Length: 307
Image (cartoon, rainbow, N blue to C red; front, side, top):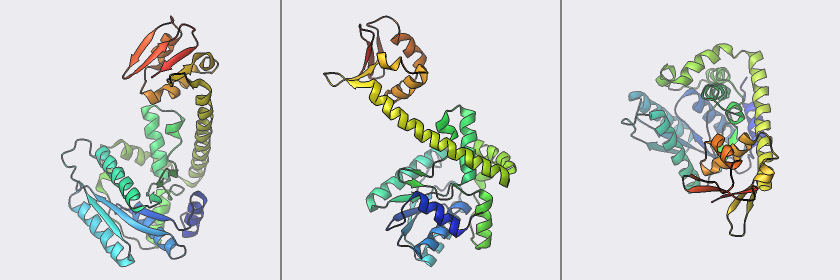
């Protein structure tokens, strides 16, 4: 159940509410307008400063303009500064991908220009679960199945602990109007297909179990990242010429080698890890060219240069 009290408690647990400046990303849909309503209520009780960001991509025609008009009305009524940005992506083939890139690029620019602390997004628990299933279908590790993080750099998702049903009930109770996004029922999108399945699965008992699992996975993901930072210091060295060197003597003490090498080398855009391992344990003096980098197997069999 979503209540103002629970919302503030979860938010306060993850970020400081003292003299914080937060942009609220508002699309005009249910989730973002409930998010805005909750933050408006917070501003009456704290010294948080909020402003609204809205992108109009003009891809839904009249529906897009109605959403922008509704947000303008709310901003005027609530006396909140509104920033709008219009993009023309009608001729783009992958509209969702393009729109996402343009939106976040603008968000980041606004954040830096006006010295705000965070941008709040309307993602909720259903979105996080949908993301898990999408990534499972694509093939993923723990990073893909841990769900969406509450906080990632300057982005926060304060509704992440609540389901779509919780948000809907809050909107009805507080008489919040919104513009329904017609693209949400388009079965051409994989997320919409998964959404229909998940909505029938999310009863109270299942939600509690899923939340517990996602929290464990997120903690384990953070733990793994901490471990990998230590491992990088252990195996990645610098030689006298300031070239980065991978110690094979040390890397071969790790298991599984393939997984460790993948993590260590992916920053160099190296993907064919299987062949890399084969070459690294092969004849000395072997040189592998990958994009602008070289991996050189030295004759002592213990070091490989990355430069």
